[in-house]
Each structure stands twice: as C-alpha cells, then as structure tokens.
Length: 293
Image (tube, rainbow, N blue to C red; front, side, top):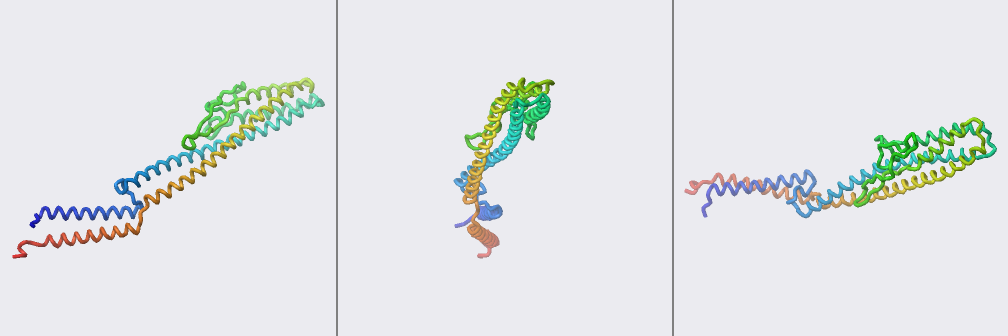
C-alpha cells in the first residue's frame, strides 16, 4: 500500500504532538502536585473538588465572622462587668446613705461619690468599639445609648452575624433601662448635696433608688450571662468548623494529589514514545524510492 508523503507527515506530526502534550501534562502534574488540572482529567473528582472548595470558602468566612464576633462580645462583656462593679459600689454607698444616723454633712460628702459613680456609669453606658460604634444601642449603633437628657436613643434590635449554615448569633445587647436609672441617681445626688439635708428627708428616695439599682444590676448580670453563653457557642462552632475544614482538606488531597510513582511511569512512557517517534520520523524521512533501484 502506498502512503502519500503529506499523509505520512501529518500522521507523524499528530503522533509527536500527542506525545508532547502527554509529556507536558504529566510534568505539570508533578510540578504542581495536583492530579486534576482540568475537568477532563477526572470529571467526577473535579466536581467533588469544586464542592469542597466552595465549602472551604464558606467555612473560612464563618470562622472569620466568629473571630470578629468573639472580640466584640468580649469587649461588651468586659464593659458590662465594669458597669456591674460600679453598680455594686453605688449600692454599698446607698445602703450607707440609708442609715438614719447620718448627719447632713455626711450626706453632703456622699453626694460627691454618687456624682463620680454616676459619671462613670454614664461613660460606660456610652462605650464605643474600635470602629466608633456604640456598644449598647442595638442596631442604632451610631446613636449614643444615653443622651444628656437620659433618653435611650438606641433600640433593642439584635445585630445578627452568620456563623454557620442557617445559624446566626446576636452581636450585641442593649442597655435600654440605664437612662431612667441614671436620671434617678442624678436627682438623688442633687438632693444629697443640698445644704441642710437630713437622713429622714431622703430616706424614701434612697430606698427607691436601691430598688431601681437592684433591678438594673440584675439586668446587667443577665446580659453578661448572655454574652458568656454566646461565646461558649461560638467556641464550640469554631472547633466544629476547624474539624470539618481539616476533613475537607484531607479529602481534597485524596482526590487531587498526584501519585508520583504512577506519574513517573507515565513520564517515562511519554518520553520513550516521543524519542521513538522522533527517531522513526527522522529515519523514514531519509528514505527514497530511488534507494530501491
């Protein structure tokens, strides 16, 4: 059978190109360590790797959210704990002020301490985070929690942060009742500073403020407990996400990692095929029909 020169050259070029492509592909696999460089290498594995990659991206975002949220909750918890300590100090002072044996001078002296604790509580209630947002104003974080007239300018809505599929955790608590308490505390502080004040004259107001303080103290303690509970949930979730991420990474390695032994065998095969094709091509190209005459 006679083979035309053009047909022969086309066949040999195709063989050389196929061997070169195979050689290049296996070298890329060995260099990158990845068995699946394109979907056609293994369509099922490529699909599973794409799903694992999407899940890893989601887990990474959730873990970033958890880290930022834990920092916010910890800041709020520390601030609320300072408020609790000031409230407890205020209560101790008010119990002393309720003693019927206090003189007017004693009560006048207490007014300075009441004023100092009032100012500290007002400052803490209007605490901000690193971004300049108010911690205890709900979603209205650009508004002070308590204004100079003791009005609550925020709201009680929760700032929800996604921490897992179909799961969010609130990033804040609100101090909606602090304004009314501070107004009452400021009024009593003015009464205690009045010249000629008597223990009997302010006893009812002191007792009323103690009752309001106990309610506020209980509310603050409850919010501290909420923040602690949320942080425990976040710690558990982060651990779970880390475990899932590790499993995903191992699955991705099992699916996509190149087998260097098998790849080396293919590399050797393609190299030999390429060399043999080149030698055959060069040898046959030198042949002529005149050699047979």
